[in-house]
Length: 209
Image 1 (cartoon, rainbow, N blue to C red):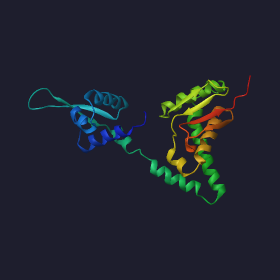
Image 2: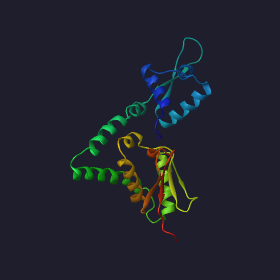
Image 3: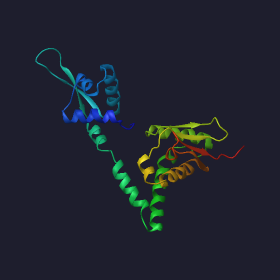
Image 4: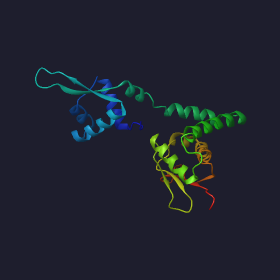
């Protein structure tokens, strides 16, 4: 499931607080048209975080009332950003360099394993790059693979770890090393959001054939 955006969360929180709402209630809440709300509701239903129930009325047909599902409640509780920052500050702030390196290595290896087993081991680096981009997209990353230059590039249109990158640049180097592990080729920074660029670009150092 793609990550919930701010408006998704606002809708789900409103439904939870008010034990449900209809389309017009949500239109009033968000200040948008009924068509816009219906489109968002359809997407949230498809994600499994929202469901519709019919409630009878004293007159006329039953009305549709939207409720948060158990999966939706679970998703609302999955905002771990502040906790992640606390953990990350604790790791990079460790005085024992050996312990710090061990923890960072474990983070790097687990991130790499998350994607590596889904890629074709015998495929070329170019193919693996495309597969990796597809897998990352399915996990909610805003990425694309670009083969238009001399060396292929993995481009992130926004930093996936902005709050951790604000602590220090360690997370940037971990991400680069993860890509090296997954792709089986050296990877270099081309651009970084942390340096003021509009995107993060990782250049894959593929040997010329």
